[in-house]
Length: 612
Ligand code: F6R
Image (cartoon, rainbow, N blue to C red):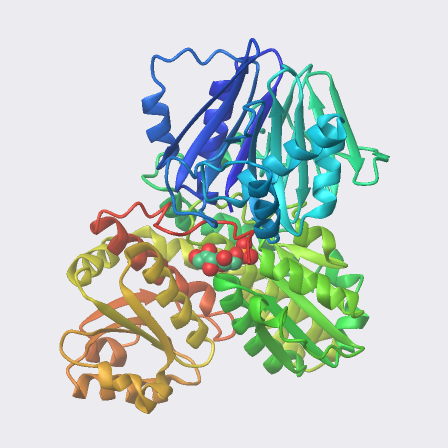
């Protein structure tokens, strides 16, 4: 979380930094700040609130500078406020620094500095690290680079930092461990950012900085060193991303744009991989490791949030089609509970951002124990993609709305292909069923398009229920994780309390919540659980709950029992979540906007959770 941007070169730094921060706001938006260096003056401007609020206060100010750093914050240490906003100034006023991450051992360092007479204007761990660097520089009479290296060796935690010095008008020092950093290489200029979106407009050549590396960045020079002061060769990557992909393209919100992109993103994910005529599925990351997957004694899926829900659906698919036992773990629990990892286990990591701290650390631990790691990741070149032994990208494109939509369906598409490939290789399904599933999967983008053709009914349902205090989402089988995902989406962007439950489990407790005020969303498409879920709907009706159903086109029974219905086309139940999730994304979106919520940046959230 937190977005960082830096620029050094001949252009005006402020507009570049500001625009970059706007692109990175999905990473946090509690407060914003910039540090600009001009003529030996280090000017820091910062403010609680979103980037636009800082921009407004700076109108008319002289912001001339050819070197600048900026930050948009997701608060960890210290409440969102002007004084806790980054960048921070050191006690001497000579250094300015910003930080994405957490310094875990900042308390003893702060106590030492307090004893030495340092004072702190904020509650942040960042200000402690900054003054620690300053103190080392002073005591050792060394360069800033050397002081930074010494400090970084002594801290525990995660960081991506940018640091500038008053008397050095050209250099940005940057370092990372656990939080992402990309450096764009221009002609006589360099751009630094948490991801490539602030850079893409200026250059497509980038270097992804690795953990434990320090970058010394000047207009004409990029030096990379490890913490042992050894030079590293920067590995230049060409960005495969277009500017249009990070703009709203006529939609009111990124979330809506991303929901509507799904016919294309799912198609892109399947394209060239799934060949419906021959039934072939070509995925090099899976093909090259098919033996490990086919012989896996167990597959452990590690993920968080929406990606975890994709993992649950994959569990149903893989166990049914491939007959391999699957466990789905919250990365945050897995990493701390000393899990048993056996030879022959395959760990599948699912992550949109590829930077989620809990998932990343869980994988590092599993890797240390000899596990084979397969990444299902959206962001190309991200940390999880890089530490995985193999993987398959979801190719959903840049997802900016904080609530994950197109990345989720991309994950489901990849996981479906993966399950089908393994099942085919293991001969655990018939050729006929395999071919039918390949064809059904191929038809999904068109069916998503059909759902999205007219969303007015879903909008009207959202209007009708927007004032509800609670929602229940119920589903069975493959649609149970869809119910969980529907509840999560609604919570995130409407702030309405919602719970997802297996439909049959509600009589073991949650049914006590049902009364005439409770909207209950049933994900009740035609599948092998259909008769059972019809009974569950009856149970809610008998208690006067308001039933909103996601039902299959042509079904008359569920719609006949429901107060409101959202239809989806028919498909095989294994891949039905790719369709049944779409109306729930739209329902949340429309409830959120009808309540006036900034659905792309809901409160307290950030897109990329790079702290534990
Ligand atoms: C929900 C959402 C989050 C993420 C979770 C994991 O809409 O976006 O729950 O799914 O933070 O993030 P990734 O997939 O980037 O690891």
